[in-house]
Amino acid sequence: YHVLRVALGIVFIGASCQKILEPETFAQIVANHRLLPALLVPPMALFLPRLEAICGLMLVSGFLVKGSLLIVDSLLVVFLLIFVITIFRGLDISCGCFSLSLQAGKSALPYLARGSLLLLVGFCLSIYNARRDQRQS
Image (cartoon, rainbow, N blue to C red):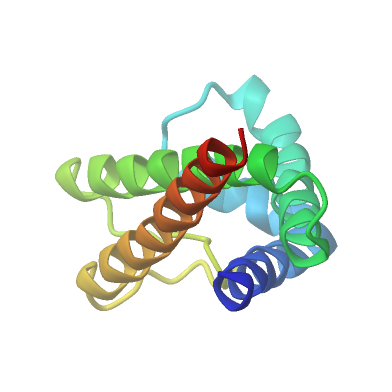
């Protein structure tokens, strides 16, 4: 449990670092998905990586884990949905998950597999927490 929690936290911290350092590039990636009005792209490009970093830090530290897992699981569901929508719309763009390269990936399958695996880990951690809380009450 602890290893998976810390690992998931590190993944989210790692995913946020470059986005925080290069918000303009990340904003371009967000805009390329064509899902948000142009007015919302800059605030989202600033807010999202910071939320990822905070949740990652909370998971690593063990502080406010349940709330952080809820946010992380929700983000992973949204990220997967965005990626699937982007694929079905025929857009060949970078996902912006861990790299700010504006070049598209060669195949969508590794991104979907990685996102699904992270979501599975997040759900397992949430279920473990819920069951632990039930046993303690």
